[in-house]
Image (cartoon, rainbow, N blue to C red):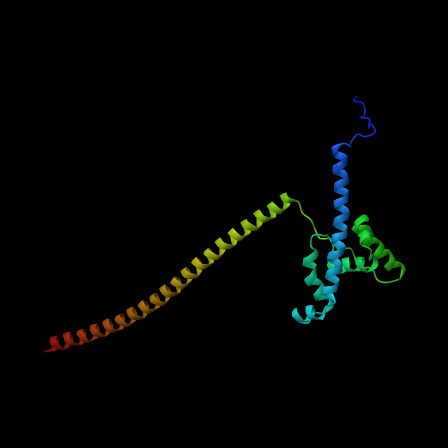
Length: 199
């Protein structure tokens, strides 16, 4: 077994410890930055010009427009707005897990007797699942294109068949007419032959 590395006074911390500290610092910064993002979006949400430019949206539709601005967080805009209204200190966002902040909002809502909205997390899929879905979509689109081509071929064949049926009906009418004319000529020829024999 390897002995643990002893840290002496004046030694610099191990590289991984420095990286951990930096990662934690960035995480705190990320929470504070998200706080600023949500604060700005809340101001946009309440802005009359924003509502007017979007076609005089009601609250729900305005929130749906802003959902696209926070689709990297796992929460929708209204959920983040509730967290912001309950936690206006950016340091809290930097040091507390977002899910815990929202759970606290729900707990406060339960205590106040307000109806509880379900937590709607955006579904995150793995890259492999994404690639598989893309492949399935591509196959489906290819099948759809083939089906459309086959449908067009069938339409053309049906049109050709209808044309052939019409031509066949015309031909039958012509044959019937020729048969009537032929019968009439035979009858007249027979009458002439009969008259010639009598003379």
